[in-house]
Structure formats: C-alpha cells, structure tokens
Length: 430
Image 1 (cartoon, rainbow, N blue to C red):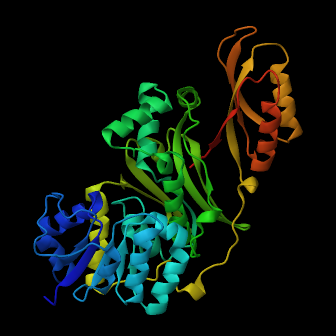
Image 2 (image 1 turned 120 degrees about the vertical axis):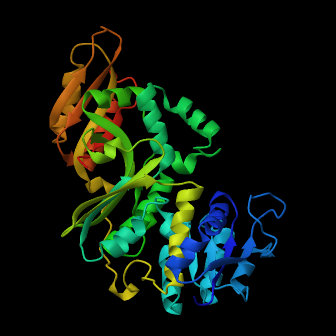
Image 3 (image 1 turned 180 degrees about the vertical axis):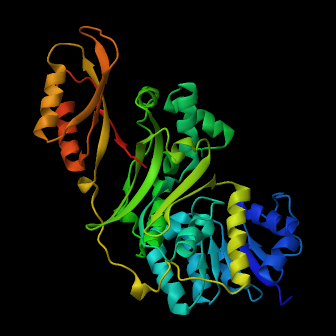
C-alpha cells in the first residue's frame, strides 16, 4: 500500500469521536477499500481533558482549529465543528486556500455559504466532500450527484430531520400534544436544549437547499427555500389526518418546473400507503425522481455518531483513492441559472381545520369565501354537534394556488364564528 492518508479532525463531539472510533475499529477494512491506511495525525477541540473513549496521546493537538489548515503533516482537513460562521467557516476557507481537501458534515455552512466555498474549491482544484451533511448515513449526496448523474431530476423530497419525525411519530402513536412530546425528546437526547433549528424546519431547509443544488445542477440557494416547522401541528390534526387516510410528516420538497425551481419545507399530509408515510421515529428518507431511472427511495438513520461517521469516512476513502467530483456535480460554468419559484405560486391540495361556533350559516360563510377565491372542496368532515359551542370542521380541497388559499384563510380567520386561527396543512401525493 502507498503512503497513509493523514487527516486532521476539528471538533471531537459526537460525530468527531465517532469518526475516530470507526477508523480504529474498522482500520483494516478501511485500508483495503481506500488502498492505504487512513490515520488521524492532528485534532482540535475545546477541551483537552475530556475522556472521549479513544487514545489521543500520539496526535498533534491544536487549540485553534483554524491552525489545522497549516499543519504540515495533514493531507485532509475534516471539519466537524458545525455552524455557518465562526471557526468552522474560517477553517474550511483556510484549508481550501492552503490547497488541502476538506471533508465536512456542516449543512448550515454549505447551505448558506456553499456557493462561495464551492467557487474557492474549484478555483484551487481542491476536493470538497460533504456526504455527511445530509441525512447522516444515507448516501443521498452520492446517490444524486453520482448514482443518478445520467438523469434529469424532476423532484427530490424527503424526511430530513429525525427530531421532527420522532415527535410526529410519538404524537400519532400516543395521541399526545407537541409540547409534551418535545420535552420528552429533549430528556431522551433526541432534541437539543434549544430545539428551534429542528422544530422550526431550518435544519431540514439547510439539507433541502443542498439536495436541490445537486439535483438541479445549480448554485445552492438557501434564501429561496420556503420554511415552516411543526410547532402548530396538534394531536387533533394528526388524529383527523388518520381518519382521512393520511399521516403528517415534515417534508422538504424541491421540484424543477417550466417556471423554475421550487423548494419548500413544511408539514405535509401524505397517503398512508406511501412508502415515506411508514418512515417513523428518528429515521430519514430521501426520494428522487429521474427521467430515466424513475423513483428512487433511500431510507436510514439520519443522524448520530455511527451513521454520520460512516458518511465522513466514505468521503475519506474516496479522497484516498483520488476520486472526487465537482461540488454541485458540474463545473460552475455549467450550472443552471433557473429562477426560484415563490411559494405563492405553489399549486396543490390543502387540509383546513377550523374551530367554529356551531350555529346556522357558518359553513355557508366559509364555503362562500372559498368559492370567491376559486377553491373547490373535495370533502368536509364534522364530528358531532354542540349548538352554540365550538366544534372542529375539516375541509379538504382540490388543487389550487397558494396565493388564493392564503387570501381565503385571511378572510375565514376574520369571521366572528371562527374562534381560532385556521390550521392549514398541505396534502402531498408523494
């Protein structure tokens, strides 16, 4: 075998420690597949004294992670610090400027600064690998960029956040409310102390922006992603979805149309028979649709030490073998400049849940507003009667434009018979 590939790892949290353990445990297997040994020569982390369960006595230690970029014995820099700014960004840019390949799991960095970082990598002719940035151990990046490279991708979608999928699964299975299940997820370590990035859809949107760039051969554009989270999903909505033959999932969906590229993250009702409806707990799934291959579905663990470390080391094996692909699948001059399609122009079916006073004329008022906005109803569901009291009314629509639906919701919400903000969930026949 040839000279070992010496790597420097910045960030020794869950994923960084997982990478070191994987390289130690599967050293022979990794060496055989990489064509040479992969060794850890240098590391950087906030604390030198913490016991991480792996020996670090023989490695070079840097208190300043950016200094890893200048380490003379390092062939590849592995960035596992996280965050779109600060030392993570500075390290990646410094490593590329120094001519050193980078492997990263940092979806926020790539979603927000990926276009500029990709240009830097291309200008220097340096590989930038990021399989671990999306869907953990699922080979979503390689699948889109390499496995489906011969296809025009029309759509890519998926469950991209395990925390949200876990919460929605428990809410459905146990009939519990969002806040209670979130607190339990935090206690179990499935949700962060500050869960905003997960439950507000930002984490999934970072990943979708990356997938959309790969799928459609265009620079990454996080600002164009429409983002909604799951805070407003109730146990009642989940139960009613079940009655209607749906399950509620937080999905990221990106599509290529004649008008341009649409990218959106929000709760969706998906038919119970759809494969993605049965992806539960902390699992992720990615669905891609190509013109020649048809539909491809990938499912697995989307986070955690083992799955994410698996993706990081897969990138290291590629680099050891001298394999690398342009960041977004093609040189920057060959990328598409298709415009982003605003959410107002989305067309689809909708679920509406209203809490209304049970009195004559209420449904006529609501359906009259929908008629005015050219929205046709597919079905209506009302359980029981309680004259003069609040009752839930569920309406499902045929396909209509988002802008018309938003106008209708505003008018419906202003009716004195509607007692709380209407709930809206989009229906996706995925």
